[in-house]
Length: 181
Image (cartoon, rainbow, N blue to C red; front, top):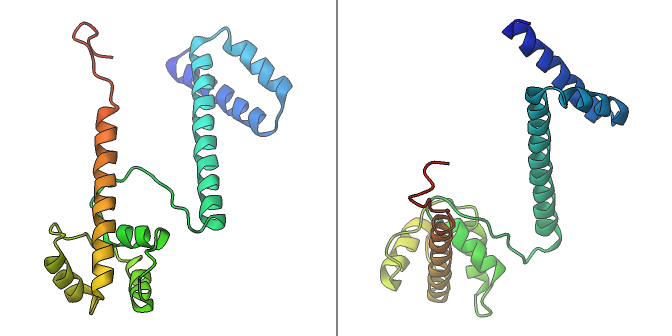
């Protein structure tokens, strides 16, 4: 069998296997696994198919769960590792889910508007520079809102930094005796 014929044979069997999976044809699946038991490359292809299907199902299930949480638990927030800079929208979302009791209706309206602002937070979160920055970008702001926004911004920024550190800390270190994996 030439390499092209071999590849075609593998492609046909994997396509046949995918079709059997789609049709829930367990007899055909069993026949194909019996063939794969005699051919390591075909067996590896079937295992890769299963791994990809499991990953796809897990991603779909996670998406469905997140959609249900967002729909039915409106005050809940989904925590996910964050990449990139902390934005105004992230801070406004934090304030939306953990709303301080003393915010005015004007502050609530501003916060709602800020939930869709993808602008990066300024580096300096001191009260006066933050107030000036917010007034320059978003118009007049209540001093109570700036204080609460600052607290939420610090919390979100710390959470984003700890997520990044956690990802780095969770990586397995190779021992000198192990060599490359």
